Amino acid sequence: MELLRFATAGSVDDGKSTLIGRLLLDSKQIFEDQLEAVERTSREKGFDYTNLALLTDGLRAEREQGITIDVAYRYFATPSRKFIIADTPGHVQYTRNMVTGASTADLALILVDARNGVVEQSRRHAVIASLLQVRHLVLCVNKMDLVDYDEAVFDRTCADFSEWASKLDITDLAFIPVSALHGDNVTQHSPNLSWYGGPTLLHHLEHLYIGSDRNLIDSRFPVQWVVRPMSDKWHDYRGYAGQVAGGIFRPGDEVLVLPSGLTSTISAIDLYGGTVHEAMSPDSVTIRLEDDIDISRGDMICRPQNAPTVTQELDAMMCWFSEKPLQENAKYALKHTTRSVRAVVRNLHYRLDVNSLRRDETTGSLSMNDMGRVSLRVTAPLFVDEYRRNRTTGSFILIDEGTNETVGAGMILGTGD
Image 1: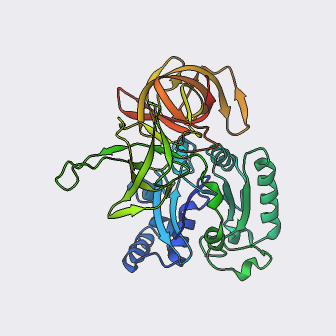
Image 2: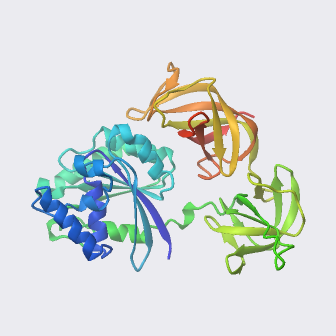
Image 3: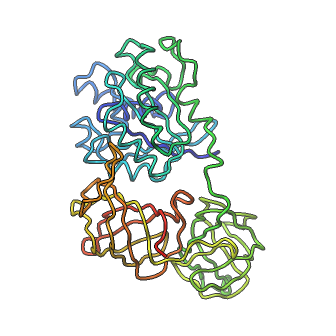
């Protein structure tokens, strides 16, 4: 079955964790002992209802405060599709966690409280989803029960968000009214929302078409490991293991190896227990070549007529994670696909105000949770594509070599070559 990854986002107390809990419960994904534990904890906390948010808020601090702090991943499946959910925090101080959860998502589910409408954090998360090239966005107007299921409230919220979304790079936007607490319109249509003629949330998730989202044109295979079993049975075996980052590879294809520039032909593509006739993103496979070529971790296998850009100059949009600000001329370790190099920040062009979309060109640094455009110089060539074309070969992370902390994530806009 096809896999859909989606991330929930929105402001504090908009009901993200409760909505996920409702999805899991109503799709029969919760074991009886799990539900009993949640019901018992709800009674102990004095709730007169089953607090489904407890199904995803796993940290002790989250349960005590009633908020989401870390990204919680949950998995479930229906007869139509498999899902991976990233429940991301709503607090501004945990924006970096939202970036992490949405970076691999096919869809962003942004919740708003029907009583409050679109607030600053709703807009912030929509901007981040747009920058991360999340192609599909669903605005869930939650807690409709608290506004007496008023259609006018829903229409007003949708109009407000649509006006803001028109400024962003969003190709698919849907609006769904729900009550996560009572289950209205989550997996089943509700008579309380009889004026709504669209699909339920689960139906929308099950039938969303994402086949065209993958880049099947630009063939990219970052080598993660050279496989040499060195056993009596496999003494001549030499394969290159990794995850396909784009395009399609088949036995018989002519390929180019970077950075050496040597060419060869794919002799076989292996999975555990056998060979396959083709591999595409995000398959993890081992590729064998007809020629003995010096290939190591960090090299890239691609097509001779369609190669990534080889560069040591990067122009990127940076999301900053660290409490220690990013400043010009600072040096970091940079990891791009399976390749690690050192980098220096040459220029900080501007800080982006994600609430107003204005550019602050006078800033000299990026603080934690800030986003801005930077230019970097790296010590060895990288094999990159623009982020809007390939989210894998178009992204990287920066690491503080002193603490080994991941301090930032970058989306490549272009190169300085």
